[in-house]
Amino acid sequence: MPFTSEQRFDPNQVLVMILAGGEGKRLYPLTLDRAKPAVPFGGRYRIIDIVLSNFVNSGLARIKVLTQYKSASLEEHIARVWRLSPMLDQYIEAIPAQQRTGKSWFRGSADAVYQCLHVITDEQPELVAIFGGDHVYRMDVRQLLNFHVQTKAEASVAAIPMPLREGREFGVLEVDETGRIIAFHEKVENPPSIPGNPTMCLASMGNYIFNTDVLVRELHTDAQAETSKHDFGYNILPRMVADKRAVYAYDFATNAVPGEDLSAGIGYWRDIGTVDAYWEAQMDLIEIHPQFNLYNTRWPIRTGVTHDPPAKFVFRDEAQARVGIATDSLVSHGCIISGGRIHRTVLGVGCRINSFSELEECVLFEGVRVGRHARIRRAIIDKDVEIPSGAVIGYDLEADRKRFFVSDKGVVVIPKRAKLETLL
Image 1 (cartoon, one colour):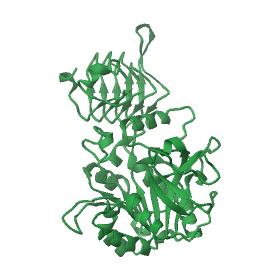
Image 2 (cartoon, rainbow, N blue to C red):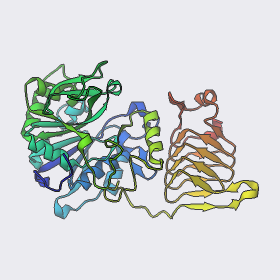
Image 3 (cartoon, helix red, strand yellow):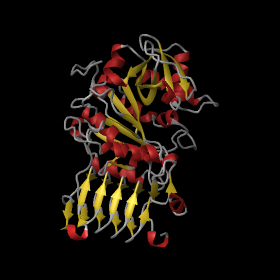
Image 4 (cartoon, rainbow, N blue to C red):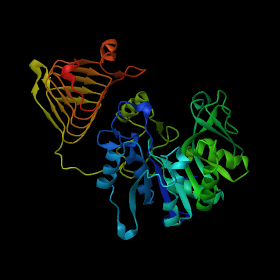
């Protein structure tokens, strides 16, 4: 469905619930002290900013963020950064797990919403959007909502086309010619293809639209099922399909975001559930023509405003190779590149790169300090780490594994506020 300003729904009758309570074990140690949606991304953002921006840019501003695991930094970020207009009944509010339905924390995505049913009862929306808070993509959610209303669906699932060989790692939707879902397949060896396109399948993005009465009914039914995993993808939606309910797949490839160039193919979407996937998504940002373009002013990724000064590059002593320089990189405000060199690197707010140091294909979080003559490549360095002078990281992975976490593809991760003087 092409982009259109025509809306078949009332945005004031849409309640958004973002699932942001996941532990993110596969992203450890970046999630050692924070929830996955609170992990920094793209220098100055948090992962949660991406999905929140999609909704706010879509004109949907009644948003509840469901939190649980180590949620303090995530809740602080939302409270301090995401302030909308109460006069217009706009809000973004965090709801921590409260054990409202018993002595248990969230047992799955469906149980998280079930434990917060009081929010739906209070708001009484016509439609509920349930989205994950930890993927990287742009979506005009209005088009998904229009699709949901136009097809008279009871539930709609956003899905992205991908090659069959890649679909083995995802939950895949089997659909008929009309887009109605006829079966769910979770990480199967031979996923079903899209009708008329035998090389591609539809992978669920974990983003759903429900009619409110349908959602409430299904959540109550699921809560009584002792063998359920209380998960939308495993239980709620497959049961609805088995019961012949009207559940449709929305093709994300048809979503046209204002300001985006889709001539190269379908929209960008990344599941950054592992360290390698997270690092690769950051490297995508610094391509000459990135698919996920942070510079699209018609669909900005929003976040808080800080009072940090502009980035500064100092020293041009070429005789001693003491030149502050950055190539193919993102440099956030407050950074000082003081006689060091970075290439294909993302710097968070307030980093300092000192003289004669060299960084390549690195991701630095806020407040990292790199000492003189340090050499670092293919590394993620968490907040407030000080790299000692002369440190060498990423060149001898066997030595690095004795001190740090090293991913399957050789990305070194240094945890938040690590004391490297005793480790190097």
